[in-house]
Length: 359
Image 1 (cartoon, one colour):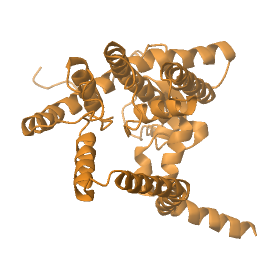
Image 2: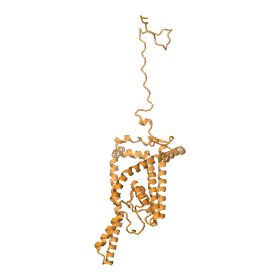
Image 3: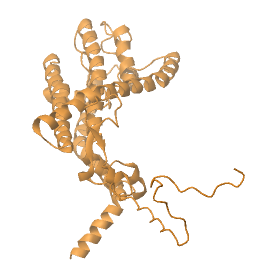
Image 4: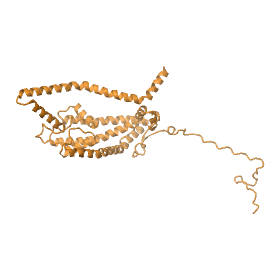
């Protein structure tokens, strides 16, 4: 029985990556099936309702031709997909005033892209391509630099404080702090903004506001919910500016949280488990007990007193650290006939040879 269990565990470890890939494919299929079961009935209801309204409208307005109505509806839908407010054409709502254009640029550079606003001209589409080809890498570079600059202060020092204050091990202190940081981030950047949005947007409930926050910071950006569309122009511009700041700051904080979790020994152990054996030498550590927490090797700007992920010397070196040095070979004893030291000659001076006959 024990031998069977050992062979099963060995087989799972050797084929962990194929199991992960197969499990992810099943996860995709599961998500598709669940969404089909949840949303298909609602979609069918909306289609039936629209068809009923269309038939009723044509029956009440017999002077209107069905083909002309379909042409009008098709044009309205096409323009609406471009982000133009067709039903609010007489209002002061514009998608490309300065504030809205700045919001559009921010959503594109952060790869959120709600899809409610898009370039309408060929020149605008060409500029969008060139602008994003340069702007997206620069934005990612800026976010990465900010993340690495904040990590020693936001993560390194608190972990060190938990070690010294509570007397925890380095790996346990890092895991506890990562959980605390994730919880605080969820409250500050998800729950509180959702409460504020549910109060500002009269048509949104708390779940819809929380959904918007998650879709935004995860850079999915479906665009089905966007704040400020039912408010005045000044309120809409203020909400768009606040959303732009929320996206940039929230992405930096999320990157800090993800980097904090990434260097945990437990996460490194999972990566080592699902990686091929040939790649495990590139990962940090050999065993969870041998992983020592720290930040100096990973982040060069970390404080000097901060801990660091490192390996014991016994793990890095192929030889034990305390190997006795080889003994020097014994000196041969003087043979017979070899000249011995005279009693008057000091012991620390070599014996003198025969005098040179030329002298």
